[in-house]
Length: 156
Image (cartoon, rainbow, N blue to C red; front, side):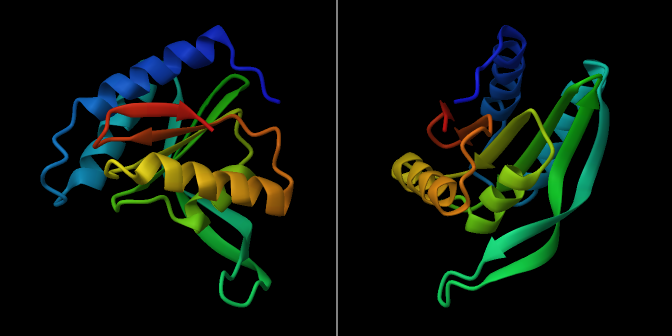
């Protein structure tokens, strides 16, 4: 099990403050607004930030069960000394499997999955995270799920 440090908790608190301060009623521009506000937060904290950070990751095709190698992008990747943070944001109701797969395979100390969500999102998202942990054996990933609609941050 991954230990969560005090500095991780302080960073999670700041990320929550930014995420829970956005207006989620309009989907137009929600992704851009959240990511740009998080980018500003990290830059103010002395991080080097890259948006649309390229990543090659293994993915499972849900219908066939086949594993494939895919190229994709993390929405935000921030680095400060030894601290690396990867963020994926899905504007829909649930986290996408490929978003979780990217986070699990990012070389980051702290991974954040953000979803607009609804009241049922947490259970579904955690179920997906647990399923992928079992499928891939990702047991040491420090992953948090943030659900904007419910103002919930959950250590997965």
